[in-house]
Image (cartoon, rainbow, N blue to C red; front, side, top):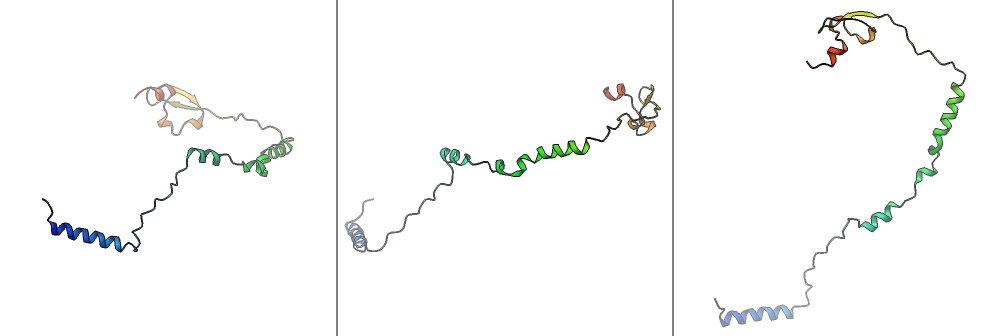
Length: 122
């Protein structure tokens, strides 16, 4: 698959013509974008910043709140936390055991289940 002499001469003529017309600008090479990834040194330099919260008044506001609360609630008596209730007699629907319990713990007398039955499997 050798080229004939005429083909070689035509190729040389084309190449010479390209050299003579060299005044035309060559196609521009594509520029690579600068990397937007931060290097390790850039990250460490950026992380060392001034803490603006230290200069804000909110930093110490909670201290003032506790002082005000102490002054406001100082003279009020402590309320009694023991509430009286009437017990309710209920029967466990699983084992049939009868118990006296706080009415807050019972939604419906028919649906009550004692602790032992509630924690067992099944």
